[in-house]
Length: 290
Image: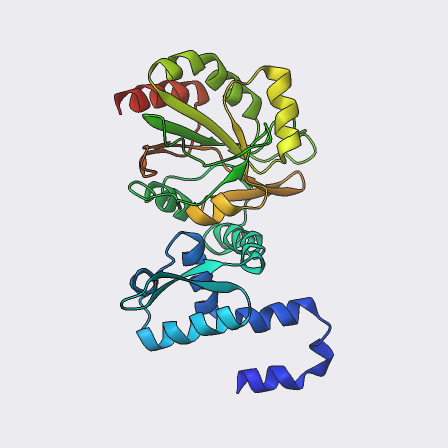
């Protein structure tokens, strides 16, 4: 009935919002895309995560494939089994999913306050700390400040310290948000501790939603020795459901630290990061222990 009513509104044919709503259709399609972005690309894994019947999930996947948002990739011939992967059209939806999450965190799960930190009793705190044991999607690559595409975690290191930050060189005076400043200090503290991380065989990667050329300018100016990765397209944010906030004109990652093993599994989570110096020291001890 609802789809029939939608088709009758010819005035919506030229409305991008209306046409996007037709593709997404209902909340199950949105959640299917959320799970595929998280790396749950096989039918059984999707069914387990979503709690959907096989019939309903088959229907939803078929429609998303028909709409060009997902594509099927054969991974087993006997019996025939497919993985469901995001197309370019589907990848372009990830910023929308992250924006929806940001809105839900602030206005539905929160009290509407804009903040770059999180309360220990909040939904973001629970969601981030539940990342322990989670594996990063194996094919996820992020553009680095040096022009290369790199995985978020270094597979050749004993462990990788993956820290996210709102952005360096940003003037927050016109848009003061609790917990937002201090990104330059965080990078400089990791820079100064870099020799200790290297001796321990531990890689360090910084991630923000700034563009690679913005990160490159900062890395050159401050002699940052480790890779800075750009999540401007929100691929990592969607994969891990990382907490964000809107500040200085764009969605920005809240400050957190993950210790990731060489197999790509999250071993330790530090969030929220209130005392930056203490967090760097603690992370060095934890990563070296691994």
